[in-house]
Length: 342
Image (cartoon, rainbow, N blue to C red):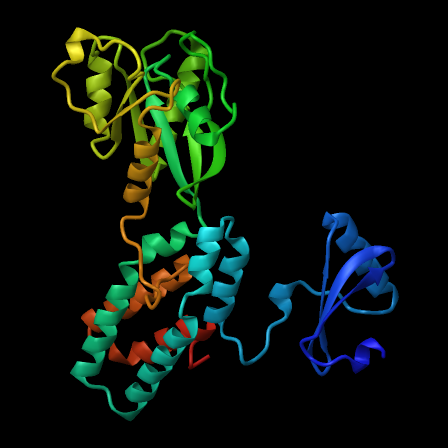
């Protein structure tokens, strides 16, 4: 029996130019081929196929008229997910239900535009927009910046969170003179941890440059962990930084050591020790709670691209401005990436 005689759905094991492969017939003229061995095996099989005049295409280019831009964006998001949790959340997303809902709105707009319908569309779009941060977080790592005075233990805490030595750890102020990053997963969500130069007044030109760069990174951070050395006295620079970044998580670091008497009455969000691991689990839970405050249920619809977010905002704005004639164009753009008038 040849491969062409195999029933649809049967899993076959074999060899392709010496490489172990799994072949599945998925349709009358469609097969899936899976192999092991990394890029070398894939490239070898691909070269073999090309030698037989098979045209190779990226999966993103395999588009059909039955697949909308919206569907492709969710398919692409699944391939970009880097953890099991984010992949699971994307796989269960009710994309087809969202498409059905958008098509229903388009049909009703053609039949008759009513205030009740536009109010329904606006309310629903606002509801979906409320989950924007969650959707973006599934594929775009949040930036978490560790800040604080020199020698406060930023590099040590980054290494503890990352699980390996990524930053230089040394009891010498000014060791980190540039931003250092590590891409990891916390609670199943991708994040980028960034270690920065210690914030202080200094005459060192190189260190000053690092501090300026650190301040720029702080301005674009999704979350700031402001570390405070609990073994030292409070400083004016520390108070100034806390006032400048009121949304930062104030972390009392080095909680395994004796507390300086000047900090007895100070309030902190968390007490952590990178050395012993004390408070690290609580820190991770707090970080995820800040970055992903809402978790949708299995039936919830959420956007996963900035294009989707921008169009949803445009739909809400059009209804607010009573630009009802723009609704069908915006809905079609959300679905297919083109206007119905194009």
